[in-house]
Length: 222
Image 1 (cartoon, helix red, strand yellow):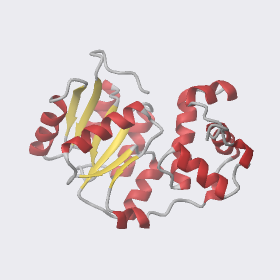
Image 2 (tube, rainbow, N blue to C red):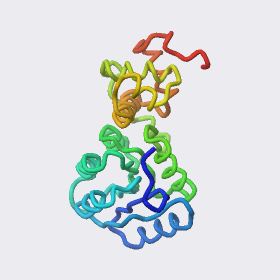
Image 3 (cartoon, rainbow, N blue to C red):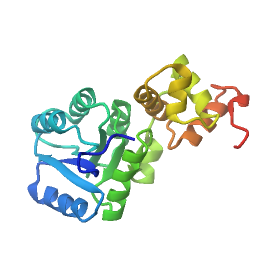
Image 4 (cartoon, rainbow, N blue to C red):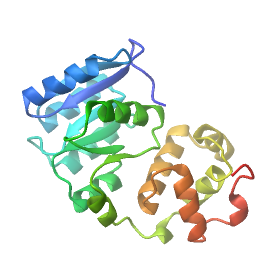
């Protein structure tokens, strides 16, 4: 979990070039007691600058803002503020862009047609579990998303997944391997993308099915 803002709330930066849409997002988020708006931007350069200044917990990023391509914007945000979770908001439901963004390390991809409760749930979800990826796209698009082949898992990713299969938390895995918890979270996100997994259990099951980790890795409680 990323640190909360100084107010004790989940801080969110809104990035969209349509002021009316940002206003609607702001009203939705500010209607809750646990979220706070850290700032707003209408283009990629302002978005990156704002994230660097405020280090928000979550960025809601429109996929077609003026400036740099969204993939580049995501990369710059992740470099400047690694603990910030990025949720893409889009009218576009294509699998190719979704695949590229997942590989770039986003935490969510939501169509702008979602309901307010889905948006709020997504923000809270990626904040509470940075290793989780939240998608709200069509079944057709999701079915066409092609992740890298399972065999491309690195030795370190396999080692981490073996420990995840034993029901160890990210912090416990970090201590076991002598890594920073943020490093384990990053590896877990990469594992999710490579295995096209939607949860830790799903990743473990797919790794077991592909013989990437030994069957005895699974926790007895499973």
